[in-house]
Image 1: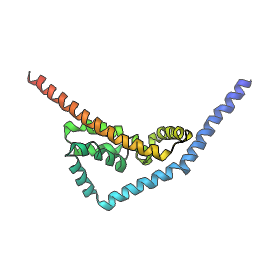
Image 2: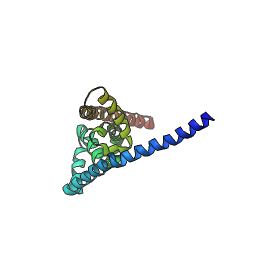
Image 3: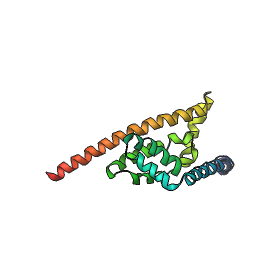
Image 4: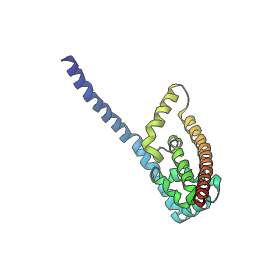
Length: 177
């Protein structure tokens, strides 16, 4: 009987803890995410969608900008999963590398811009909680995570683009043969 009583109490306790966490989100992170997202869309509206598109088209011409600035802007302005739509500005053989860069930047951006990938915020907050318990700064972690993310997406984009072009050339040779 004690086991059944314990199970009933703890089973309900699980849902009570979930409800408490939900309310913490509703009064904490959700309003922050809404304000940050509203700010981002306001900046785009202020600058003008046409100008933003023109700037992104310009960035897509240069490898360094294509795999650093473009993924950063797409993730911060459009958020996950809409960030992938910036891929329409790159050539077909560059799309896998652009996608790889965007996907690789979805976590590093979370510390500074939590609205960009809110679904994965719990991962960053778990790491940040451990860092804070160890006596380090959460903001320092966020900045370092962001900067390392930029380097990683650039490297991944370049490597993936070269691999894609190599495989396309190899496929073209095998089709001719």
